[in-house]
Image (cartoon, rainbow, N blue to C red):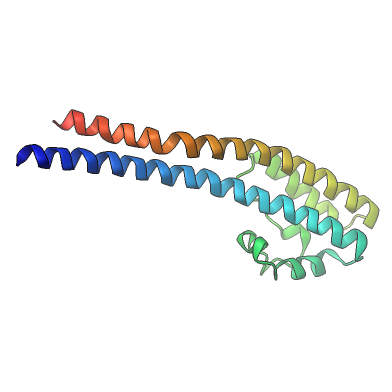
Length: 157
């Protein structure tokens, strides 16, 4: 009977470790999704400013209606300068994007479109790295968590 309880406890610890690893992997995936949504927003801004000749505030109001941009919190954002890049990006890239978004407010339309293209390219590069990290985390973290749980079970015996 006690052997069955030990076995059940070991399985429970391994499952808990795998669950913790899965949570960490999903956090990495969420970071990638935030970066991906921001890059798509920049592409949307570029298209709307270039082809529909809307202002930045009008574009942000229209973008707030799309569910794919809901995770970016655009409901209360009425100026491009107030748009906040996600925390998934490195601090230097976030600062650069914030400075460029501030400069977009006073830039002519052609310059703004060029800046948005460059910003979208920077986001895509960062997004590619985050995607690789998320994929690796999804493959690795649940297994590592399960192994850590199994090791804890062995140590407790």
